[in-house]
Figure 1 (cartoon, one colour):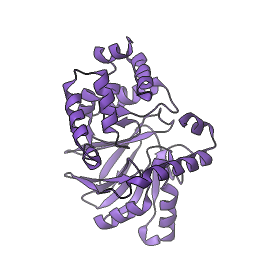
Figure 2 (cartoon, one colour):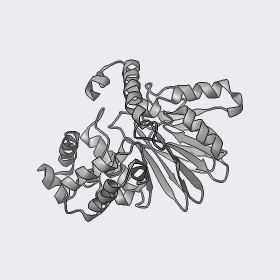
Figure 3 (cartoon, one colour):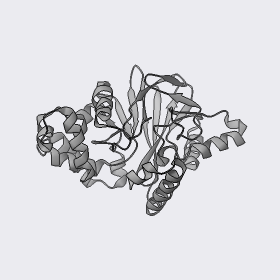
Figure 4 (cartoon, one colour):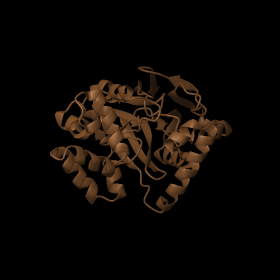
Length: 302
């Protein structure tokens, strides 16, 4: 299915994807969509569930009350949370062009054009014409500000060619929004890229961030990812501990497992452990790059 969508014209594939996610989200509508908040010294992150298992994130500068939204696929919900939070929302951080992440950009942009009291809306993302209403294309190490917060862009092509992660560091706290590149105990499918690109994204770039960096990913996939990780490394006690938590949790409890941290991912995420003998042995490979490729193929069939 994914291979077919990639061959279709962008607008058609986005329409089909929108229909798919809408239908699959219908049964979830009656479940709790409670916002989970992480209060930090200089910033606040509000994790907003969307669709079936997506996350949107409202990032607030505590000093200025300026805010940005990461992947606002449900604009009504975004504006509601922003209003309730008493913040000025004027930036969108798009991780990639897929509808369940960028599908709300156009609608949100139109609302800001129609209501001038909201101010201008800047939409950031990788330099990709498939990202609707992109006003500020960004690449590796480009920076932007959310109030007094400095955001550094990390280019992580593979899941899509223009995927961007967003890293914020203050003297007290560090966070990264990883979209569909890095999940809790997993990574995105290699839809438009190569094993080398995912290796560079996970091992060269994201693994280099401080271990205490909070990882806010694009989807809640914890249980399936941890089951796969436990299959690959059954003796990894850190993975088993998290798997037991995921097994015992309902959907809201699994959502609460995000954010992870870079340090936790290095201990439990097999895609960030391709240098480990235990992971290489599972796929029968002897190099990290071969292991990355074989591991993703195994996960795709899991």
